Image (tube, rainbow, N blue to C red):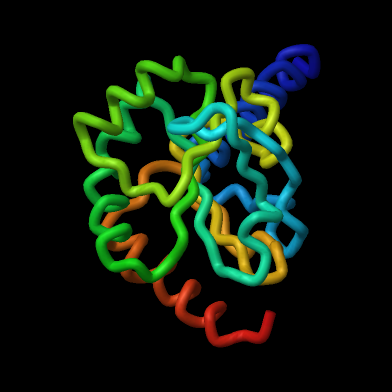
Amino acid sequence: MWRYLLPLGLFVGLVALLAVGLNLNPREVPSPFIGKPAPPFTLPRLHRPEATVSPADFRGQVWLLNVWASWCVSCRAEHPVLNALARRQEVILVGLNYKDQRNDALQWLAERGDPYTVVAVDAEGKAGIDWGVYGVPETFVVDKRGIIRLKHTGPVTRDVLRDEILPLIRKLKKEPA
């Protein structure tokens, strides 16, 4: 009798763990980068490959890093929201083009509009790894001191922009550098 109860107990335990895991929201995984300095990188610019861009270029300013790629379906969904954000001119919007072909990225922006102040090219994905990116799109809000204050995984929607990102940006702009 006992030899049947042990496998049954293990099975019930596995089912319980699976049920808990399936009810978790992967977008709510806390980032270990929140409250930490933005990881450094020096990458070529998409539009001017002879020039580079780095988080240090934005020290003293609140900025948003949006990790995207032309092959990313979800990036298409968030792009109109980013274009609208750029028109507001409330924040510096930095693109991190992730594991993409330069010509594909340029064409994608030409067709859909370019909301970015500057786009860094992370062709091999090394900077993305340093930032803890595990999928695109991902968006980070960085404060004036270069500290990551928010990470949003998945497409930025109008609601996320209105309820989370813009209020945080406005608050951070009021803080001293």
